[in-house]
Length: 114
Length: 114
Image 1 (cartoon, each protein chain N blue to C red):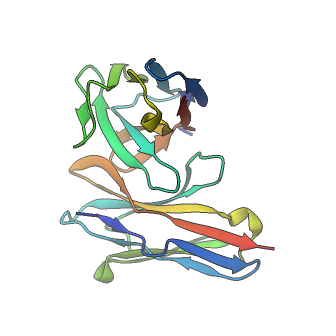
Image 2 (cartoon, rainbow over the protein chains, first blue to last red; image 1 turned 135 degrees about the horizontal axis):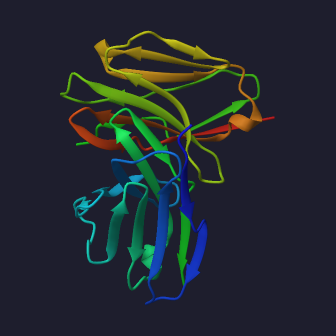
């Protein structure tokens, strides 16, 4: 079956630094990749949608200069949290899709900014 | 506007009881897809089922069953003879054919007590 690998699974960083999270589709080419953020005891909120070779589309309220998304190939998307602050601490999870009826999720990254 | 509503925030049952999770959705598209995911404490999303809008047949998979009713825009999920391992947050989600985005409900936390 389709597998999406997400790294790292946990990261602790100092306030003001940047963190990069990788999302790779291992056995299929993902037309579209999605990035979600989940705060404790809340639902998954879509941050942005990215297609290979084009700029990401950000959801309303998500700062594109803070959350940099690069979708360099059909199997790799990265999310960089720039100048991270404690309020950015959250669970970030990616998803890869070939079409509207199938989504494969990564295992998530728990980011803690201290 | 919220596309997926899971009105039940938390459900607590004793082992072997049945539990039904409600999901009501909203869409103007005639072609759409409905999903259920399980999120255990470890955080990863476990895919349970996908149903397209043209397939109203109910489905049973082991102790899990789903009731899809377009007339009431509902896609409810029942766990029969619950077990402690069923304790998790369950999310209902919707994607529309014209939009690859997956919209999640708020989630229902299920606690099964021994």
